[in-house]
Length: 128
Image 1 (cartoon, rainbow, N blue to C red):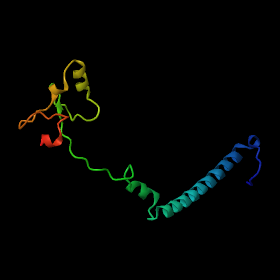
Image 2 (tube, helix red, strand yellow; image 1 turned 60 degrees about the horizontal axis):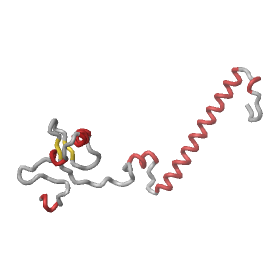
Image 3 (cartoon, rainbow, N blue to C red; image 1 turned 120 degrees about the horizontal axis):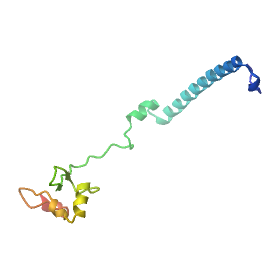
Image 4 (tube, one colour; image 1 turned 60 degrees about the vertical axis):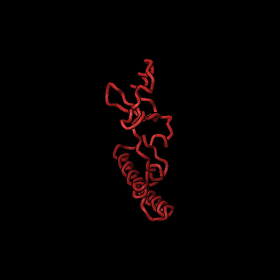
């Protein structure tokens, strides 16, 4: 069919179906062409010639490799269970409940059998 003004309501089901198939074929061809063109542009911008999928798959999530953090040892232990907390981040529920019940944080400190209790405010040099 030639392009132009169509009175779709006056067309038969067969004519509408033919038009639908023609439009679907034309759309999928154009979308594929446009996708190829965009991939070419991105490959030029990427400089390394990677395809978009390879480029996205090989990148770290934040754009940089993650920094290695030292291991953080637990400072507090829940006496009722084996749960521990390092003292960093949000207080665990068991600690918040204990503090609300009137306990002190010092009561939950994990003591080092070779020295004094590890306190969060103790300088690193004093803990060694």
